[in-house]
Length: 246
Image 1 (cartoon, rainbow, N blue to C red):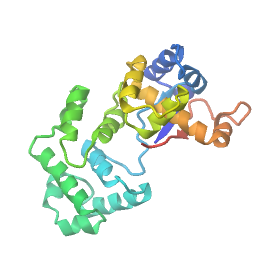
Image 2: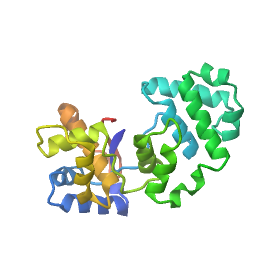
Image 3: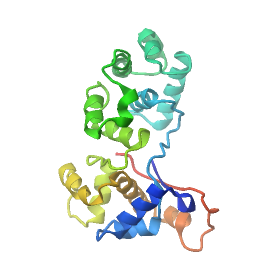
Image 4: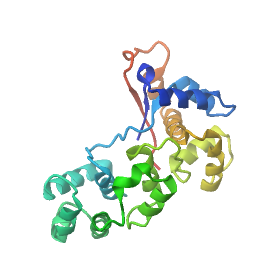
């Protein structure tokens, strides 16, 4: 994941979010002011996904393995499935084909289960953009292999909802613990309550928190990226700050 600074190329929503979050009497505000507008929706995936089904499929593929391994397996799957994750192709594929691409048996079941739910209409991905957040999450976590964190990332990155907060994310909790100067790691329940002040831009707040944590963990790299006097990107260019995945 990354926090992507948009600078002069920021959209109206990005500017509004930065202004709102930066104007609060909140410990995050100075970081928002120093960072400026960001794009919290850019997927930053190492592969190209054409639709929500492919996004969710890659989410399943990438669980508990390195991004390099996930990219290689996903690419082999695309080739084996004729260039896409059409549900009917996934359902018709032999287990040996999916296993041969590098999936575990559990991930074969999950990928096939996702395809079956899309094919039979239980999961209507075409309606996600108009559905309430709670309904989307409820439908997604009912699919084996898709947990709450994946459902939250899907809403944040794929269908671009501005007010999603992954309270259980390890990076978010670490950033909040440091930001608020807590003596122990903040709990997901407390983090969710803490996030209420950032409504209706909690997706933006999440990306700012990830960027904040990265800057803490990589101070020299951060100074090289944005320090005063450093070479400036051309107006409108995007600067990316990596963030920690939970």
